[in-house]
Length: 72
Image 1 (cartoon, one colour):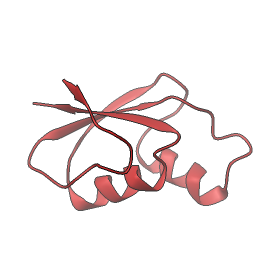
Image 2 (cartoon, one colour):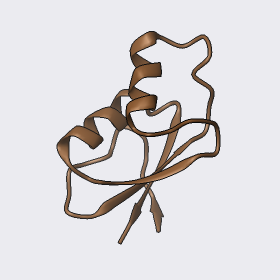
Image 3 (cartoon, helix red, strand yellow):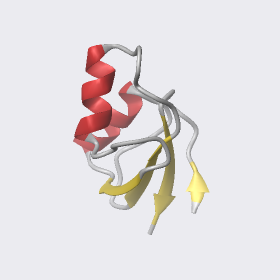
Image 4 (cartoon, helix red, strand yellow):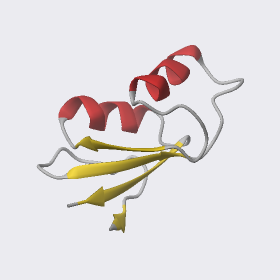
């Protein structure tokens, strides 16, 4: 597993392990909605998603709230 720098996530054929690292309280509504759409429910929660265009776009919208790692 290698960490990906925020805003450097690219579309690929692999999987992304996405972890919420900061709270959405006090954040913009579209950021709250994006984090929820990724399937994240609380700080420390991790989901694994395909690295498709939709997921990559959502991750690049909220790079300050999530940590992204490539998985095989």
